[in-house]
Figure (cartoon, rainbow, N blue to C red):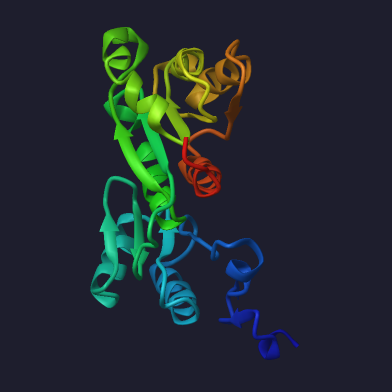
Length: 228
């Protein structure tokens, strides 16, 4: 039965996969949307008890959940921009992921990606507000792009930034479309389609606003990197 299986923490409302770190190298992450504050706290506790030596991550938390975690779990670290929390120590970083964002409106998704990368064991270099409307800003940080082991490029509006970055460097690149923009951006669909149709080779695309998914992939690439 599940309650006797040491790979599962049965909380009644959730069966937490506490064995995931052993299988994949990364523990289960709490997706906070749709969960009550008490449920978020309970899952965080279950994962932290199983893996006290490394950080547990909860993403997409509503303000009420952030407040509850802050009060009930005082050792948790709160990231208000990312709308996420960590509980436990971050691992020693291996490799570096550069998080490149087009504008300040993309900051929540970029912050989620950056925190995810840190929790999953890679170093983070934040390069913010370097969108294509001011291309000189991006050209001024080319050395940092080349120095990274993986790139996460976050952009809304027309979603052009990943193509530009992909044309400047051969570093593995994960593109993240965001839901910012005016009406015809269709909540990030325009950016998503632009990135899927990128003319720059080697651009991989995740779903709209999915900084978490991009961060996990990029951290795994960086962790397996070799000195260049």
